Length: 124
Image 1 (cartoon, helix red, strand yellow):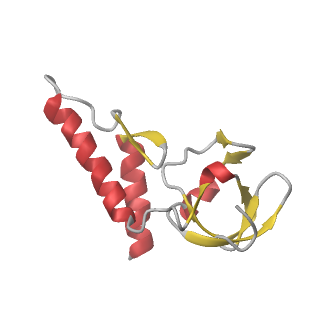
Image 2 (tube, rainbow, N blue to C red):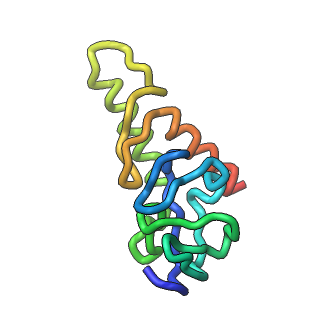
Image 3 (cartoon, rainbow, N blue to C red):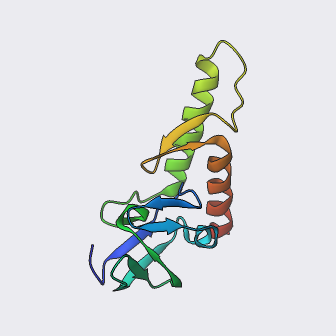
């Protein structure tokens, strides 16, 4: 990545987790699923146009050329995978604790629900 690249802040990032050299904090969550431009480098992470307070690592961002075009498809596929796990199970699963894989990370149903909520509030 370089200054000027258009990036997408990945969804499914977990607050207080370290990604590369940067810690993802709760205050950064509102940028998940949003597109931005890299405007600078702090030496440890990228500064992006939509957030002048925090820096983002390569692991938190996806170049738009390789980012999925439609986030709703990614989230819908993750929901399908979660429901398929229930369908294939011989017992009732706690879907809020069951993990699914998307955006290069394992997320439980609660995380997926929060990502959908963020996506929907961003789109409205």
